[in-house]
Image (cartoon, rainbow, N blue to C red; front, side):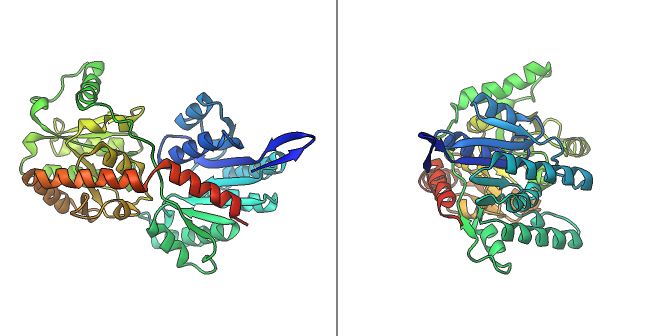
Length: 392
């Protein structure tokens, strides 16, 4: 929306705020929204760190505001400094909308927004943090703080029905919640042989020989930060027990704090030739076509872009039935869902796909059509802008 001032048209101002500037699902969400709405609004992104999100935004000409003390871990001094900086920033910038993302900055940003009298405060929950594996007292505290964040927001966007139900189970939230699924644009997937060539180049660049008979193996792949929430250890355990493991290679695209732990696990299980860590890859989703199966063993999720991308690539998917994944995949119709932390179910799912390749191919085709219809970027933009306009 636009309004007149001093005979000039002044655009409404939106500030997006996010804790970390690495490249993950929440960061991609902020990137897509900010780039799209910068065509119509005065947009800036407030973030912590100097990661890939910052680089990509600056390449698109989006104004970026660094918040130096903003980190994911709890640190009273740093958190107070971040809160004070946000409050001063909101008062100086006088945005019409602030849109905060992630639990940490959600609490700090919504409180600062209220004190700065920002007209519209939107919070997106990319999967509730109290769903993570933590001691019960921590879960209780985080859930209480999440509830306060909802109350301080004018509107809360949840990316999955599961998150929506969690939010609506809390008191006084019934008019606060809007369900808007993540969306993706037309697939950026490259042709299968080119994707495999790029993955093979990984070995040559590192000066190491690829696994033997790699061209004859079944390629299983996954994309995700190497974090406990992603459940990589359960997939690796499943592969160690899979009876046909000699014909399988599991490629893991991503980096994170769990890499050393996972690599040690691979060595202990003698799977060095079967589990390959490809590290972080720019435009990782474009490589999905290299895989025969996409395996996503997460323990906790919101609504993952990786599943949407794999669905657009048209390959069979095995995924944990967590977060919003069952809203994308219908078990044994558009993919195979397994219980989280369950290597045995992963094994059975792999065996099914290998024994019923025609059915698995049918699942993939149906999922491709569903994602194209129900999870588009245009739909996400339209519904999000409606929240900006109507929230009060």
